[in-house]
Length: 218
Image (cartoon, rainbow, N blue to C red; front, side):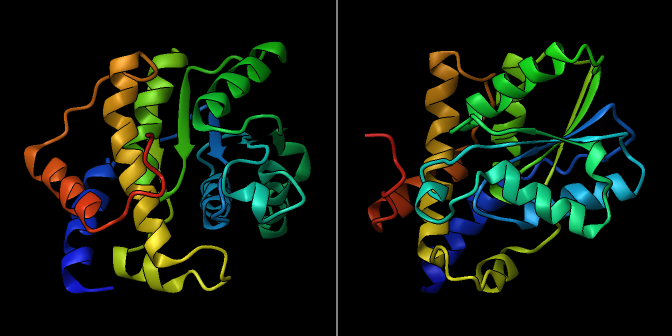
């Protein structure tokens, strides 16, 4: 991976971070994916006392259906409980296969259990903070929404994930695809609008030119 690629990818990485200051909430909402560090971050927040329970959402998505036999929620819950979160404090939503379903199915699960939730800490991959915020804001009306992700720098994120599940190049392709969705999904009404600065969209165009297109919507 050359310096030009990393330069443009870092611009998109920084844009997706919302840098929220976290306070106590009614719920920690962990969105499933291929990256178990998201589960570790959710457990960390619970053990800090920031919410009384965790909901983990995820069936098998586009990436994980080729990686795992268990659902994302099941795998994440195992990680969360191994860190010290009591099993009874973890709810699972195991049917969703994309971000929109993560949100809608989890919202409906909470409503079905008649749990009152006015504030949420949502936990996702670092380059999905902003998209999570925009989508949750559209489909789940709460008084306060905070988003966070594993506390890891860009270079470390690319280099530290050693399970061999996806390559660094694919991570950047996913980032590019998520930025495209930020724009298209707002236009389709699937999330609230988020301003995309010119330099961020220029970085997107450069990465598309460089071939990072495998996760684009055609």
